Amino acid sequence: MTRGPAARTVGITAEAGPPSGGRDATEHAFDQGYWDQIWAGDRAAAMGGARPSPHLVREVAHLPPRSALDAGCGSGAEARWLAERGWTVTGADIAAAALDRAAERAAAAGVTERTRWLQVDLSTWEPDESYDLVTTHYAHPAMPQLDF
Ligand SMILES: C[S@@+](CC[C@H](N)C(=O)[O-])C[C@H]1O[C@@H](n2cnc3c(N)ncnc32)[C@H](O)[C@@H]1O
Image 1 (cartoon, rainbow, N blue to C red):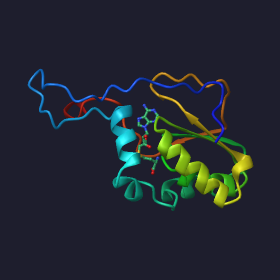
Image 2: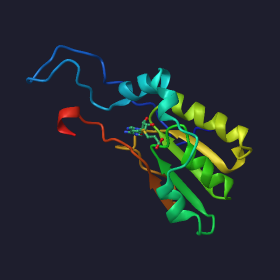
Image 3: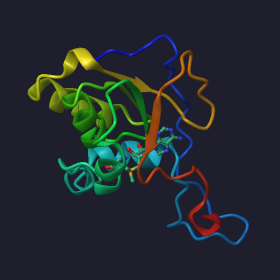
Image 4: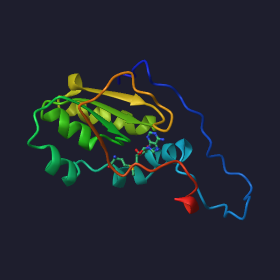
């Protein structure tokens, strides 16, 4: 997997602590710790479908391939679909396990050379390049569930 120069490791803030402010201990914050657990656990298979979003297919299938960013790419179904159609794709996600899975799938599809995978926190990341297409699918902001 290629980790670009803008990639950085962000701190895990999901340590379970005592409930405060009236919040329930079962609540989580959609932060890196949460997503690392999801992608390392049993829910990864359900999360990481192989088929791209029909919204992306509908909006993009007729466009000429250029450069694209998939923000919160997960295991890369959309990024891979784009790369298979000639796009040069950056998949960005906070979870290393998701990116590893995305890179494996891209390799199996023979599109490694048109993909790169960046582990970044989208809430603070500043890309060092521009993209012709930016797409995102079901990316959650990092905030407590009850504030969502
Ligand atoms: C619900 S999943 C959707 C994944 C993929 N886009 C899909 O449709 O299958 C949300 C994704 O956003 C990523 N994510 C959540 N917060 C993020 C952040 N602050 N920075 C980067 N990625 C983040 C998670 O790791 C997860 O892969």
